Length: 156
Image (cartoon, rainbow, N blue to C red; front, side, top):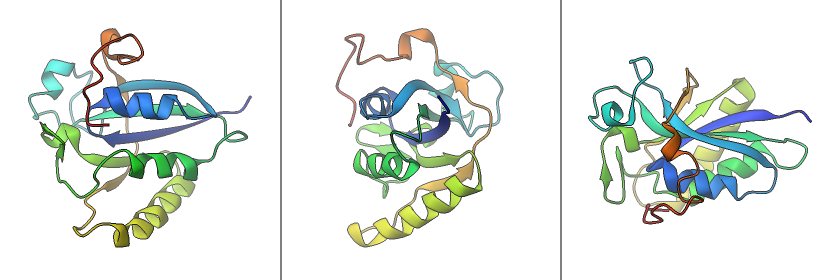
């Protein structure tokens, strides 16, 4: 099976992971940190809003069963892309709206989808579209947190 990766930030990664994990064609999800300047950040460090990292979800998917466009649809559906560095009660740049593209095709599709969403919101979309950098997996207790019976109170 040939797989691809996609990386999204849309607020608290617990709920974001659960939303993507449930999609047909998604093979694996991992929550973690990306888009920042420090190496191997911890949750505690990322929560200080000083590392530059976003709480993100790395999605491994089978492109023969789902498309990157379907993942983008889910991304736009599960959060408010018009709030800068915030989702619901969660505030800080670690909760920003961002698409971290793996290659130029993903970048083009992300940009097209962003333009297509502009008319759906009264406020401007602030979602970043940025080339993926190193993804640092979050601590084990964060992985599949909602599935394990953790809080389901995320904004999603």
